[in-house]
Structure formats: structure tokens, C-alpha cells
Image (cartoon, rainbow, N blue to C red):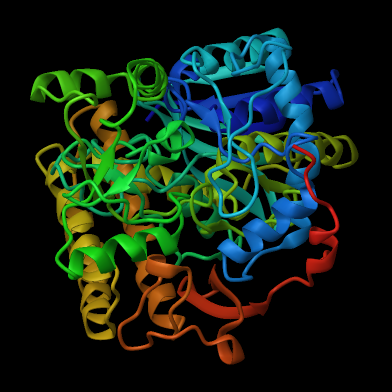
Length: 566
């Protein structure tokens, strides 16, 4: 296996929304530093916002909302299992990111006076800032990375971090075009590899038709775990409202400000609020069990101008295939409601609360290692939170690189990773990656999907462990592309095991449907008002334990005293 090596001051793994901002801010913090971005796709169209985004869901815009109000909104939405200091940091600093995006040419909805238009979708606050024509968002971000003179290495999939004791020293990976083994030596590393979106099977049956960007298959979670970093909230699954058979976002979230809502077959509104949360999914599940399934997104009562505006947002950003999906089925928002479903389970802090444990400085439990975006645990941070913590992570990584010398990689770690990758390529007639992936994801959906039951989860864990020992060893690849897909299956298995063990460990129900256990159906703050931590032990086994929730930095009274003025 041919090897090529890079050396840099700051390494960014993942060129999505958090990664691009991290790279830009690291370079701005110290222009003399070398900053390298590693992307397994192409940075121009990679990450969860590859085809743009329809809006910012948590923009704290002065005059419309306050950071204090936002902190308690998210605290309540997550049953108190949050690091308020991190959320407060995001709330206070996100407006600067919005203004910078505006300067770069990102299209935001504005009124006649040129002021941002902000809608209310959350339970209390007003934070939704539409981006009607932001299909070029990713191209804008990648352009700024290039202007900052960061080095970009596309088509290299990071697979493991390099460490020395509890210090990160770089990363390893594979070029999915050439098959070369890649080593990157770095003084500081920022991991922004996205959600673990390919965990359960989709309702449509398509492996890559997931709610999350299908390229985000959990490498960030797996790399952090194997490097010894702590992860938390893994039992808090991401499950979202989707369109039946399409698995794209149902977008009552987007249509709600314009008059759309979730309805039963009679067209009657059945949810008081369409803010995406475990409580909303629990409501949908309860309605289904009361005979009110299927549910629908209702817009056919709206006027032509409003529907056209919703279409311009939903069909031109993020998922332009949505337009073709409706056309193929002869669906029209003006004539009929859109049938809904709920997504497959996955891991994502952007929409729930699972990820690598970080503090308000984006620091992980491994020295020199930072994390941001959907794989870093800042609950319900969405796109703007990913960018805000990308800024924090990149800036702090640059500071770390200035004051710390680089360490030489451990040759034993390099050889072990080469061997793991070589075994797959040495088995070209082995089990194809897509067959193996289907089996492990079917196991996740059948045994771990809420409502969670101990006996089912224990059986599921047994099957996951058997898959690791038997099936995974038989997976092969015939070329570098298949090698990358096979390595993604390795990450999916790591995440599946974490999901099963963390779900069994937390013996209560919390976060609405996200962690609803039929054998422990009640919230139990007396025993479980704490974080569940997943960490790889020195004996290579998966350890689980608890940590206290960080002390709150705001009282509820402080939130009430800071009322928005618009």
C-alpha cells in the first residue's frame, strides 16, 4: 500500500459547515500557521449542507430574541441534560456569524428596510431566519476557505486519529480514488465529520436515502472513541418527521411560519407546535397508536403566493430532488396534503443531543483535539451552532498549535491501521459492503428503535457483537471506492454498539421519544439527572459511566427578565 504524508499545524477533518468555518477562523487567528482540511468528498459540495439550506433554525438576532431566552429554550427541550455555558456561548456569538455570512453573499430573507426577517417555530422564542435562495451556501464557504489560503485535500477519508498518551498527533486515512494510505501529522486537530446518519434503515429501503447526508456515516464518532475521547448522549437518538418514502424533512418547521401545519387525515391540526424535538415525535407516535395514522403536512388551505414561496424554499435548497419526487407522484401542495412518517434512528447533536463531549471552548477530553458540528455534543445546535462552534474550535486549535510542538506519530498505530485497511482490500471476493451495511442497519432498526425494550436491545447488542466478530471480518473491497464504503460499515458498527449499550445503561425515559423505554417509562431525575459517558478503556472494551450535569450559568429568572422587543 502506497503511503503519502502531510504535515500541518492545524488539521480539520471534514469540510462541511463546521469544518469550513473552523479552517477560516484558524487561519485568521494566526495567518502564519498551516491549516489543512481533509474531506472525503469535495469541499465545494460536501457535508450536510451540500446543496444549501432553507434557513437558520436558531439565530439569536438582537431585537427578536436574547441569548438568555435561548439558553432556557434549549435547556427545557433537553430535559436539563445540557452544558448551559456551551449553549450560552453559542447564543451570544452566533449573530456575528450571521452578519459575516450576509457579507459573503448568503441570501437571507429581509424586510423592505433591509432587516432580517425572523419567524417563531420554537415553543417560546423567535429564532428562525429563512434563507430562500441559499443553494450556493457551500460554494460560498469553500470559496472563503480558499481565499484564506488553507490547504484542501479532497477525496481522503479519515479513519483513525493518531495519539501519544492523551495527546492527539494527527490522523490517518485512505484516498478513496487512488487507494493510497494517508498520514497527516498535526499539532492540533479539529474533527467536524458530521452526524452518524446511516444507523437505521430508511422507510424507503434505500441505503443512501437517509434523512441525514448519507456521506455522514459516523466516522467522527468512531475516530473520537478509538482515540480515547469521551462521548455523551448516545442514547438520545435523532428521529425526525419526514415525508413518506422520500425521507427528506417534512418541513412543517419551514411551512409553519407561513401557515402550514401537521394534520390528521381529516385536515385537523394535531400538534400545537412543530418544533422538532422528542416531544413532537412522541406526539406523532401516540397519535399513530390512537388510530390517527398517517399524519400529513397540510398546506392546501394556503393562497397561491404563499405556496409558491414555500416551494421556492423547499425545492431549491438542501434537497432539490424533492421537486422531482412530488412531480413523479403527481403531488401538488395546492391540491392535497403531504403524507408524513418518522425517520430512521441516528446520532446527531444538531437535531438531538448525542456526540463527542466538548466544553464551551470546543475542547474534547483528549489534549489538542477539538470537535464541532453535528458530532460535538451541543444539543439542538443546527447549522448555525455548527458554524459558531466551528469558529470556536478553529480559533482555539490555532492557539494550541502556537504553544505546542508537534509529536511524531506512533509507528504501531500506523501499522495497525494499515493492517485493518489491507485486510479489506485483500478480500476482493468477500461480502459486498452494501450487503453488510444493510444487515447491521436492519439490526439497529429492529432492535434499538424506540420505544426501547430491554430484552430487544440486549438481543440487538448480541447481534451487533456477533456481526463485529464474524460478518465484519468477511467484508471485502475490489477498489478504493468500495474500500471507503467498507470502512464506513466499520464506523456504523462502532456507533451501533454505543447506541445499544448507552440505551441499556440509562434506566429511565428522557427526551420524549428519543429515549423512550417501555420498561422504564418515567423521567427519573432522582437517579438519572446526569450525563451517560461512553469511553474506550485501556483494555479496549467499551466503558460506560456517568458524570454530573455541568452547573447552570443562568437562572430561569434571568431568562424571564430578558424579553425580546419584537
